[in-house]
Length: 369
Length: 195
Image 1 (cartoon, each protein chain N blue to C red):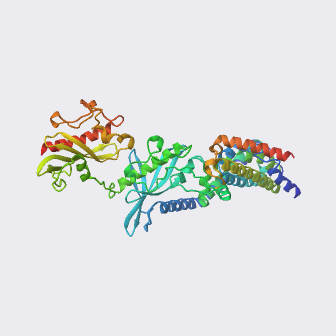
Image 2 (cartoon, rainbow over the protein chains, first blue to last red; image 1 turned 180 degrees about the vertical axis):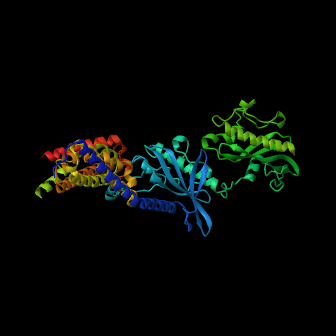
């Protein structure tokens, strides 16, 4: 058969027929593969869920539900149950801030809020760089290379702190080191690491919302140690004689006595306005209401914000901030930028303010009784 | 038959698409950060190349000259789309690994180049051999480049550790390393071939 001439009719027909045929074939192929593609996706999701949550015997996909998390987003949650009891959640989270856009991860939490494992469902990060996130955030494996095996030596791989497995995010969200966090970013792929952690943090937020049973890890407060560090000489049992004047749990007053005579009061008070939640403090007052000393029982501020908090208000070289010996008759303690003389800790005004709030509430408690 | 074997060998050596013709360098540079990625990209391209060569040599007389380019493109794109759907359905792991480069096979100039230079002028059987030869040449070149880059960049070949990762030069995983490695490979290949 000779080649068709390039007449308008021939060109029109040839191209039309080819396009039509191709369209029909592809349409048919699409029908055939749609189901398999959906199945493959479902299977992958199923496998990923299996990896990231503790053992379960229900059908997490069938029981999945959407959980809204800020900014109009909502994440899909897959509850894992064993014998009808919740054992964990797999959260399908994402970030749009990857180096090549969208990153989707499945993060599994146990009921305490610890990360069991994660699985990257979708990403378009650079092969060899950003796609290292699939292993990077797991505990590092020491591999022995061929050369090391042949010549019988071992070169220590550079240690890195990048594993998020087993981390409980109630102790603070995850950030790369460049952003003030403690997770080492992927070498040459900081943007990917940042986006990945953003997705993990988002998953945790959804997990928190969707699971009212999760309570923050119990705070162990060293009450007796705090009282002893403030008052060295006493012979009663302040904890046994503790009382409070309001119906709230805190502040709590611990009367400190020697030979039956009161020497002062330790007041346990708190503020919920720290950068990372509550701050608990023990303030020691003498019988006149002068501040003797304070002791921070608990805080979750990040190290660089909390640095110096322990001693900031009793630094003798900086009288402006020294609150030791102050009396409540001088009024409440407020920061310099609110009209008083106490400087906030540089870069940590919020933490300082929360601390002062706790101290003030302790002083008010003393006044009340 | 002798001619067919010659066509096949030519595709790998004398007309090697990467080292000699320097065609389709975009996916070559982008996907060869590791040996396995290079190999799978090479094989996927080889499949499309063989299929499009067959289809075009069969249809060559039905396609008027002035519309041949759009016709070839439609045929090549159809095979790429079919391959992508099939891979997503049956080997989703591989489809994920190749990501955006899989649909981009459609615009790889090797495919159009072979359609134009060979399939449109030859019968089906030689076109198959040409597809296999060029495909092997492409896949081989991508695998070699992938091996070199993975070894120098991370100390591994096909994920098997040869020397400690600490000694790897990250440069070779990145784009500049792709150009450098490819440049030297072209030099070596041509030097060896001239002998």
